[in-house]
Length: 246
Ligand code: OAD
Image (cartoon, rainbow, N blue to C red; front, side, top):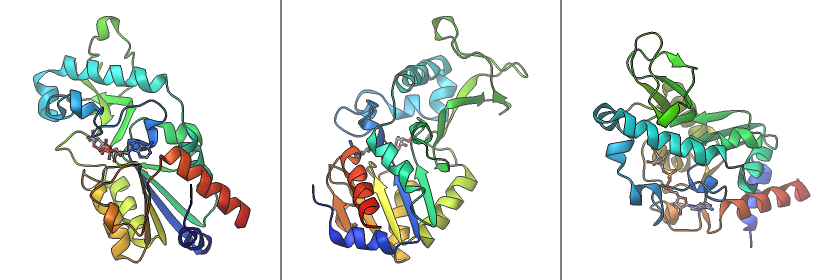
């Protein structure tokens, strides 16, 4: 694999680096992406399983689907892509990691500051009164837990279609995109907004934008460099070269 010199030179000069990740970064950990041919949305309907309306019409079904995903995530580990990204946190004066992933594998790999644009699947709260729920979630027959305060249905802390993204995380992600010298978009189809607008925002503000994705996306042609490799291959190689040369 060849990492272009232009990218390494930009990184050597960079003070401020931002990274946006998507499901592809966790693919090598055995977690399915959404829009690949074998992805979750090829088999499941996001309107039924990842929307407020879907939860209101069948909360038990949605809860079971998320519990199935929690099971897969609990059985997976961070991969070399996650570890390389965690390493990069210490290599620049300012570094921002923005993720659309809900699996917390970046944190498990050692990333300390992560802007979670789509929430996380590990924590839960009450759909009705919004209070955090820390009770038992592993009930017999994957029964939907009820809020001890108001009796409402418990839901995961993920962002569903049609919901607002966490305001602070999105604001900080936009500020990072505007201020960075180099911006990476890794393992995302750049189909879901507002996350998908971040690489363009970075480019408009003068950042050098790199895409890491084995497949073409709607952003590929706009990227300053496109690395058509899995993130678990490309990112450790970039870190290795930087450590050797910096
Ligand atoms: P997608 O499934 O849309 O895109 C995953 C991308 O990862 C694709 O472009 C793949 O080519 C790429 N990919 C696959 N394996 C890879 C690897 N080993 N290394 C690098 N890239 C790889 O997932 P996202 O873009 O994350 O939102 O999807 C965005 C949002 O849509 C998700 O957060 C989720 C989903 O609906 C909600 O549920 C709200």
